[in-house]
Image 1 (cartoon, rainbow over the protein chains, first blue to last red):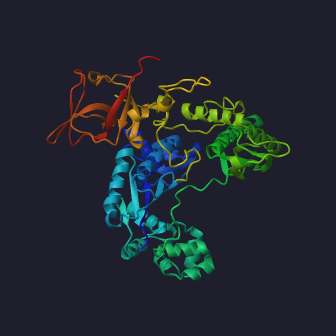
Image 2 (tube, rainbow over the protein chains, first blue to last red):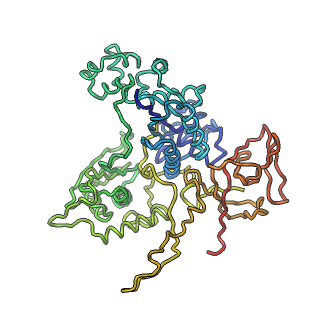
Image 3 (cartoon, rainbow over the protein chains, first blue to last red):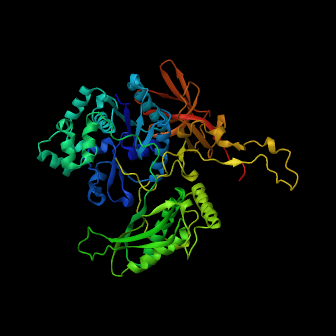
Length: 421
Length: 147
């Protein structure tokens, strides 16, 4: 018998974060919009009940949603990131085996708690709710895949009170018989269609399939999934995050951008952010790629979405070097006469900062530069992002994302605290 | 499941910020090591004083005068600890009818009141119809006396 694995998932995480600090949102339908207020990316249960779909473009559902009394928020990732860290911190009190899987999900190894899984999981739910205000659901199974199924079952079945345990074979069978192939973690629609074509129509069929045959037809990933459905763990907990392979910072603009100067400002801001991420992870970049995109949803407008890259002589985490290289590429890519929708910088080839090697025409970032940039990072951490920045990233920033309905940074800025009487 | 946005801090991360105030500092004169060197201690950490449960601690700004009798004034920052359980007599941050308010919790039998620390405010009894929630316990207040 393998050790139980729990998947803890925050319920409607972004909507729940907004609700913690704004009591007027309690019990009301809430939607949260993506960066740039593009589409709906999170819904409270009440909003789901109104039939608002995930990914609905905001400009299409705006009018309808407003008449339904739905509260709307632009995404506030500063707040969600802080609340996520708090939730993960509370979870870490329950096991040393914690894999933070995404901003609102974590896998927990529960070896040693086999005899009191239910009590333990319910006390975990209660503690996260009390300490952070965020409601969570817990699914427990012998494998990550079954823990995912359990979590889904817990969410969909109110009578389960936010917890579903699929340790017994019969319980697994019952849960699997209530879902579709596409509901299983890691099965895309296309794969599901192919499986159905060869007679594997349900999750139970898939569990009974011959793993070796699945491997021949679909590859090792799906074979592992079959084994996981049978209760044989193939995916262990990843307790230390894998080092980043690449960094990408890109954003859609708040409005179409046509001028090179504005593109350059935006790209500089993204480069600054990318460099900051490099330093936070102790990495250096040896290659820079820049891309531009026009709006592909406007086929009536001329389209141009180029990208190009440049190898750096010496890997660096210095903002100034990345700014220069990025802008050099941008000037080569830019053509007037297009309405650009998005730009971005990709650093695809990262090495640890300590392993950078000098070259004939350059040396690694000097200690003086490193401490200067370290000081900038510290100031920005303490006094808020963008307190100190490179002038190249602009002052007016007309291209910035729209976030018209963003809540305050209640947990990270002294000037934005909740006001109480 | 929303994708991990690029703006999040690396996870997991600690919710507290270290801010140190040195209580002992002495440049070491060449040739004469400081006699205190062996006795150097860690500087006072105000987080230790103010934050018992980092993940459960939040700050809010006071704007009303209902608690001036307990020395809680408009403009003060109240440090709220959600890990503490409110008792009879606790100063709490409550949500009452959709608004945040700091009051004293009073319980007697099955009955619950929110009491102000200012005679101008009458106690409010909580009943079945009230939209009421205890958000957290007020553990400290902080007031700036000089800039």
